[in-house]
Amino acid sequence: MTEDRVQVYAYRWFLLIVFMLGNLSLQILWISYATVTLEAANYYNVGEFEILFLSTIFMIVYIPVSFFATWFINKFGFRIGVGLGAMINGVFGFLRVLAGPNYLLVLFIQIMISVSQPFFLNSVSLLSANWFPESERNTATGLSVISQLLGIALGMVLTPIIVITFNLEVMLLIYGLYSLIIGILFVIIARDKPPTSPSITVKKERTELKGGLKMLLLNKQFGIIIIIFFVGLGAFNMVSTYIELIVVPRGLKAIEVGNLGGLLILGGIIGAVLMSTLADKLRKRALLIKISLLVAVTSFFVISFASTTVMLYIFGFLLGFGLLSVGPVLLEYAVDITVPVPEASSNGMLMVVGSISGILFILGFEGFTTPSGDYFPALMVLSVLSLISFLLSFILKEVKKEGI
Image 1: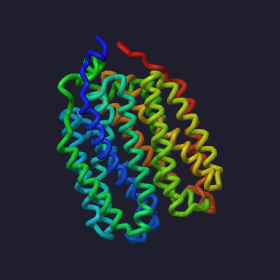
Image 2: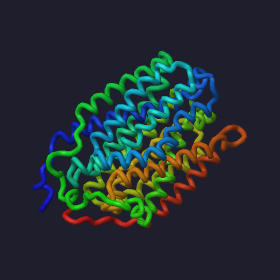
Image 3: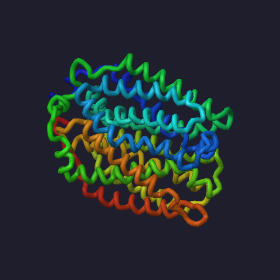
Image 4: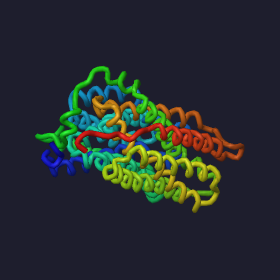
């Protein structure tokens, strides 16, 4: 039996778009303070660390909530699982503007918004497996990851423009209304799965599995993926959170910081599109992982020494390409090498690892600078860790699947 005998539905693309819009909203709410750290600190009358913590809390909350979200999604399915996350994100995203300059109240709201995150992130591969044929799974997963990157890019680029043009409260209102509208829309249109399976592979592999966590931890290939995710996602979260503090000592101004953040994500978006498409066509995921990591390593080393805006722009773009293009390929590769563990379990495990590393990197590198305030020492450590990940990627082997 081949894939062209298995029915697929056009509705899959509509569902994917709405899922992407919800994911985009979540990422905007996460990163919305990163490029206006100093302005937000003045508005809430707190220090820079307290503003950085508004982003860091997403990674802290993700760790315990992810296990519940994975269980909830596996038990109740995509529609109810992600629907719950979409409504939490929408309601509390809107409530954020009502908190005013009360930092403790905003922190509580950020914690509640962060609760919705694992319901989205742990469902990326599940949506692809439920609705898309094997030949489109990397593309669908790539588009989901791209929505995360696009949300971060919009949050970085638009936030300083809105805050400078209007004020911080207007920014919170715009993002809050958007998150609420998308949350309601998702609940209305979401479906768990199509009437018939989109792929013979899904029919063979899908199973409810006990002991899935043990199978993940005993899988050596998956262990390498965990290390790569630990370094890559942790490094990205650290750079995204500290971006203003990293580049302002090198002469960049607020708008230029936003531009750099946008270029970082633009590189990731282009890379994710390219690598996901190549993964579907070439079936060479291990090779593509190596290429992405090589680009990331090179970019990190150059950025560590870069002092001009042009160099930071160029290699910021390439860093995003390297770090973020590998994401969707890694997620689908992890699903393939851990069959029959459910997709939400493997995705969830990787995201938990990335959250842990994000916390460690953000807190560990706080103030890890030269006497002049340059984050050169932190960037060099990230460069070396990325090099180690690249070398470990040579252990990964290509996966061959029946019927493909």
